[in-house]
Length: 121
Image 1: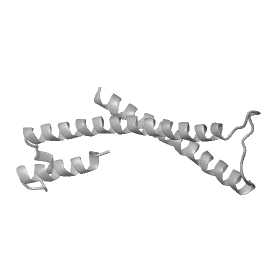
Image 2: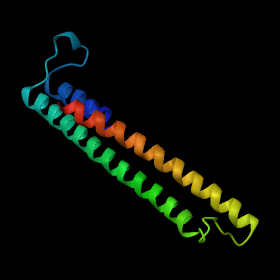
Image 3: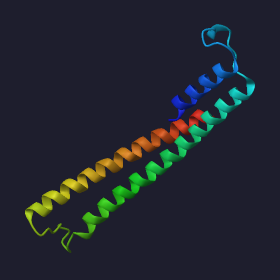
Image 4: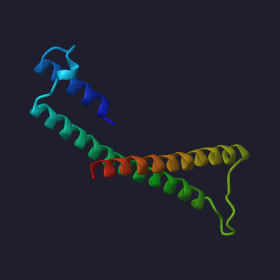
């Protein structure tokens, strides 16, 4: 997630600390710079894991809200009631899109959380 800016910072600082950029085959970054890059990469994996968990929670909440709205529209016979055809079509479209977005958030969140968790271990 934050890998590209960290690698760019790592390379720029390494060139500033250790000589000319054309001598890439002999170049060795300073030890403090290696520690900085590892710490920021580890932090970005941790942030990716927490962001993934947050996406899963948001996706589940979105699906819950969409399903609750549909449940609250049902009458005693279990049939959804709408004021008009347009309201029915619009509501069903928006709730269907909300459920699909919720599912997408859950899948992406689980993937991010897995990469963040297994990348650290």
